[in-house]
Image (tube, rainbow, N blue to C red; front, side):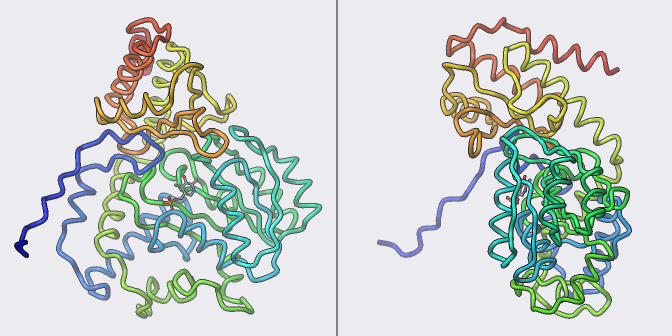
Length: 396
Ligand SMILES: *Cc1c(COP(=O)(O)O)cnc(C)c1O
């Protein structure tokens, strides 16, 4: 065989990404990834890092000095928070009501924590009183909770729980991977000790970085550890010497990903956090009205449904995979299937960041209507689009 057959070019299709992430990325962010590479200690690059830290503080609503982007996806952010705050044998309480709470338990166990969990069924949220009882009984160093549980669409109120954690002497760490830039996140006003996020949900940036922030108290806990952080790569004491004025080499920053994050954050700030949250809410209301007109109900408790992650029950007699395969093949639409207890039972429709747009709501409703009707569901033609468009007109 000839040795020099060129591989075929890779030409990915343009998809409508309406799943649990990655979300659609605006052209300006994709273009930023094509900027010329700078060295990771180039003055232009380090100035951009400083700017990014400022943007992150604005989006997290915090003054925390220890605020930066860890290299890796959202799970690296989870791991960075846990391994830096936990030393072997420390007690940690984790609130588990879905896949990501369960992941935090696993991460904490691997870090050597004495892990205690409280549980809620999928689709529900925790009540501050049950958290108070657990904190009183366990007296943990740290409590971890998921603000936006992407596996169930549950939107967990945080403020009261943070207060209770501090009354019991515990620090609180929250997962804002899906919440940040989609619904309000108030790190300082709520008194959060540590939070992490990811780039590919409501920030609408490709996956690859994990914004993190630590309160002064958490930073103090990190700087007075008795043992080394279990992970070399995620050791914040070393990472902050690169992000801080020392600029000590730790690992090579993913340059192009940092360009993308800077651009994505600039877009969030341009739009304004409140306007962005209102946009997520309006598109959610239109989608929800349209789904209801087709008889589709939410798997998440009423009053706790995330606007950016709509977890809906698959009607009886409708096959999950038949619908999702057709959405992808015919309209290029990706929605998510159920995870864990919701596997095969629920769809997860993400309206995150740039993806939260009326044209996407209209498209997914029209496509779902076609699929459901073809599978014999009793759905009135056009009803979903009529109520969705009424929701938009009402808002005007
Ligand atoms: C997506 C997600 C994660 C994990 O992020 P990856 O980027 O997939 O590593 C963690 N927590 C929540 C709530 C998420 O939605």
